[in-house]
Length: 145
Image (cartoon, rainbow, N blue to C red; front, side, top):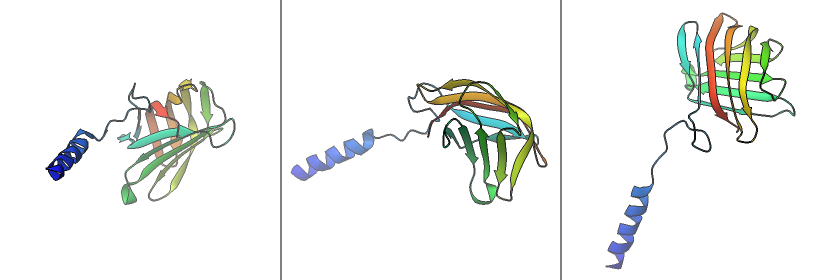
């Protein structure tokens, strides 16, 4: 009888566990996303976040795919504030499984830089990186990592 009770308890514990597949931020109050169009093709990141590796700077990362289909953004801004940043004065790099393409023009605007809840949101447009034209960029509620 004890074995059945223990087994039932274990099954109930595992059955009550649920994997969270949404893309919510750390406090689950709003969805997060990073999207844009690259040479006319939609890019929707599998994962995106920001951090501050260097004092006074902001680093944004977005990743889609793996292996040969990997696409990746690394954006390095020279401040930690909601403002518009010029490219290339701030580094904006698009990488895929073949090479890294450093942007030579464009702009990025951070509309929300929430230091209290540790999330940022913004847009970017008219980015030229090698043979790639990147437009309609939006990132929303990216968490600090």
